[in-house]
Image (cartoon, rainbow over all chains, first blue to last red):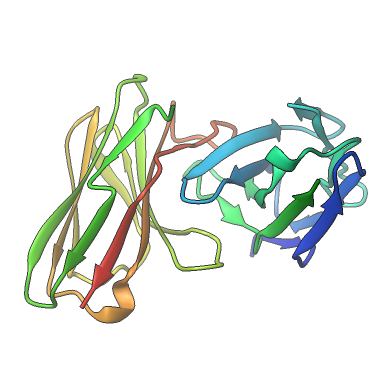
Length: 112
Length: 114
């Protein structure tokens, strides 16, 4: 079945450090891939998406590239800020029912 | 500000109570969802509505009863819940019920069952 494997956290970084959160997936067909972010006390917000191989999603300085050959969708940011502290979920959707399969989430804490 | 509005933000209920969670969106989205999220876990899908018809029920116990009165509103009726049902209940919507249509989430209702 479809699944997402996400890098275990928590991750603690200093401000302006580089971030990579690994995400790999297993799916039949051609899934759409997403990164969602959840700030404390809030629901999930779409951070970025990619719907086909080699697409690059980007938003707020975050980027992720849909790599079919390695079944990966790693999240990257060149310089993190304290305000980026949140839980990040990798997710895929591969069927018409739009049932999102989430990874376990990675908690990021950025310290000044 | 989120475009999916959920009320109430917090709810405490006893095991014999009946309560309802409400969700509203005005983005013209035709698919709406209920998710349950336990602490430090990813959201788990409960129900999906497409064009106001129930499309998916992920084997949710009957003490949870969804309702979609119109394309903008989604309710979750709760009855005879158990303490283990305490969680954050998230509503979401998407333009269509399609894999490439991203979900927009509300901020959730934090439910405590005593």
